[in-house]
Each structure stands twice: as structure tokens, then as C-alpha cells.
Figure 1: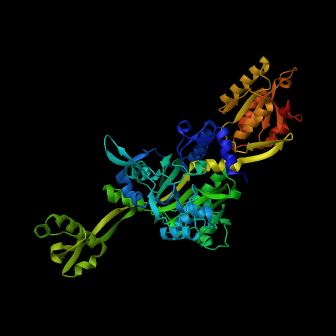
Figure 2: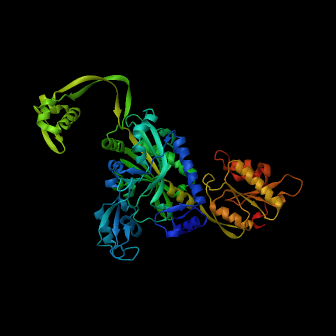
Figure 3: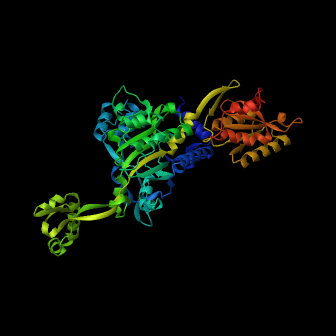
Length: 598
């Protein structure tokens, strides 16, 4: 298994990602994507958009990254978006308490434990500050809110926060988005964009950072009627690590099918099961090593405040399991909370197939009596009476009924409430949709794809490092090399080939610097699938000009007529076509003499 420092060193040297603001000493938790990294990230996002927006028939939006405080009061993030912090008494460095436990004990999910138990584990294992080795046993563990606070407008302005997830940008716009969906359920809304969390101890490159990219899908459903197309994925094999298995020291993740896991109740929601199956195919598509991948169910103590059930997609990198995607059944929590706090309607009108006649309990309070008796609370008392009528009509069988307003109990005579039950004809009802959410951490998946593609082998007696990236993910589709830089015939032909490849819509790197072997090694390390070399053998003689096409993984080379190069490489890059390089080798002359050493 490749060491994480080797991956990070390659990423920095070859322009995938590196610490930002280095000229000013840098700030932990912020990274810049270099030319190759930005391209890989863009390819990953395009593949996600293709699968979860286009092919699913969903809408995509782009919401602001800064939102007013009221949004996060409603969502619960102000009160419940915390990590556990312990501060060193000697050097003052802050550390995530659960990470200290996980790094120094056999406990894997310390995040799910309550604060008193975390404090006890620090004492029990005599954990010390990683920075200065001071004792932490007697230090308190405190909750630390992860959101970045800001001010909107001049001066003190309006308090706001940089969003900790892209989801709230979708939820708050639901009243308008439902109109775009013509008020029909189910419908999905996606968003790809930055989110911000003020991590206590950023670490491991782009795995844990303070600014990151999420790709999220919020699917709005009628929980009583809408069912996912589970048949499409019921036979997909998945590796599951349920909560029940995690509680057994000897238990391990196991392989089953989505259909079996749903039937047996291991996956409690058909919708969550459906998205696990869809995501499984997408991870394979982008190059995640499925032997180092699993779906892990959240333990009760680590469930988010909004989640009825949650599974994480996890990849193994650097010997550790990391979360790369969360799949949550959020029920109606978010829409209900935003409706309560905003006063707007976050419901959808559900039309009945035929009108229904129903009995409806109602009140018509005598306000001439309520006004003098309750003063400014009279309106609230009347609303409370209607609520009781809807929830507990039997309460009006007595002579008096009690209501609570702002924590104070009031008694109202039943005849003043004017309670009655009427028959009404309804054409439909307003329902609050439930939400199913797959939330993908783009940066972590980028890192996973790079590490899982990292290879070391030997070519011509020399060790070679290369990235076996899926062609769809590679930053560059092909590189073109004139064998030497002092022959106009080769340079002109190399320019012609480069132009043909770019005209075919391919990303091309032109490189005439250094030995041909070094140029191959540079492209191998960034994962370029194919290299095209223009040499003298291809321009001499009476036959049409030819070039060599070299495959990255096998280092095999074939000679191809210049006029066919763009079409052949485009075919090899097309996921709908046969990508096997041997098919090209069978139809063209394979070169036995290694051009890499020419």
C-alpha cells in the first residue's frame, strides 16, 4: 500500500494540489488545486453531474455560499454542529479529542461517543499533546461549533455564516423549486459547490480541510406513495458494515446485494438502498478500488440531528477508512423547520384521484369574550383552540378546555370556543415532502482516486511511478512528443497531430523538452493514458506518415498512420467503445524496439 506522504509529494510536484498561500506561510486546511488537480476535479464533477443530474432527470441550482443567521437557526446548525475540542495546557494547541483517541487506541468511531466518555478515555489511555507531549488527562473536552461566522453589509451588518453544507441552499429555495417541478413529487435538485467548516485540526492533505467541495442531491418524495426504482439496482453487489456488526469486535464488513439488504432490513430505507446501488456503479466508473471500499452504517451516537438513518461510503486510504459520501434519510425535518421559522409554505398540494368527503373538527371562538379576558393573547388562544380541535376533538366534550400559550395555561369555556364537526369535500391535501440525500465529498473522492491509481513497476530495468487513472478522470487525454527538437519535419508533423487531436475535442499536452524517456515518465506520473511520438521512422520512405501511440499502463506501442491517430485515440477514450489497447495493436504494427530509449 502506498504511503500517504508519497501521494502528497507527487501531488505537489506534479501540480495536483498543494497548501495554499505558501508565500505568506500558508494556513492549515486550505489547498490550491494545480493544473492537473483542477482538471481531475473538474472531470470528477462532470461525471457526477452526468450520473446524478442528467441521467436521473434532476434539476441543478447554484446557491450563495453565505447565508443569513436565521437559516442556520432553523436548520439546527447553530446548536448542533459541533466537534469535540481539547486544548493543551502547555502550548495552547487545540486538538480534536475524538481524533486523539482514534489515533492512539483501537477505537474507530470515537466521534459517536458522549463527551464524558471521551474525557474518561483520554485519562484512561494517558493521552498527551501531539505538539508538545504535555498531559491532557485533566483537561476538559468542549463542544466547538464548526461554522465560519461573518457579517453581511457594512459595520456590524446582519450576522451570517458561510454554509457548512450546500443542502441548505436547496432547502430554503424549496417554495420556488417546487413550482419549477410543477408541484409533482418525486423530484430531485442537485448542487455542486464549496462549503466551509472551521476544522479544529485539519490534516492529511485534502482529506480534512476548512474549504471543500460538495456534490449533493436532495430528492423530495411523498413518503406514503413514492417508491424508488429499486429493481434497477437490486442485484448490485455491495460491501456493507452495519451498526450491528460494528458492535461486535470480531465482526467484519460483508458482501451482499442491495435487494437482499433491503429485504432483510439491514438497509432500512428503499430510497437509501437505491442510491447506494447507483453510487456503487459510479464509484467503479471514476476509478475507486472496490477492494478498498465499503458502506458503513452510522452508529446511534453519531447520527446527525436530521437523520433517521445514515450510511457512509468509505474508502481505505493510507491504511485508514475515510468517509467520502453520506447517504441520509432526512425525513421532513428540514422543510418543517424552515416553514416554522420563515412562515412560508414548504408543502406540496397532493391532488386526490377523486374528491373526498371528510369530517373536519373546527372552532369559531367568540372573540368578544376572548378579547377582554385574554387581551393581547386572545389571537394566540384562538389558534391554540383550533390546534386542539384538529388533534384532540374529544377535549371539547368537557365544559372547559385548557390551552397553552407561551408556557402559560389558559382555561376557556367550551361554549365560548363554539366547537363543531362539519362535513367538507376536499380535492387534495398539503403534505410536507420527505428528503433523501446522497452527499458526496468531492475532494476526498479526488484524493481516493489518485491514491487508488498510484502504481510502481519497472520499465526497461528502471522503476516507474504512474497513475492508472481511468481515462475519463485523467487531466490530459494524450501527449505529443517530437522525438527530437531540431528536425523541422518532426516538429511540423507533431504540430499537425496536436491540432488534429485538439480538433477532436481532446485535451493534449505538447512536450519537446528532455529525453523521450523522461517525457514518458512525466506523463505517466500525471496519469495521461496515451502518448504519441513523432520519430524519423514515421516520416521516411514512400508510405504515409506514421507515429507511435503508447499506452500508459502496459507501455506497449503501436505504429499508426497520422490520419487515423485522432479517431483511434478518441475511440480508446470513449467509455461506450472497446477501450482494450490490444484491439489497436492487432490492427496496427506493434513496435518491439522500445522508442522510450531512443
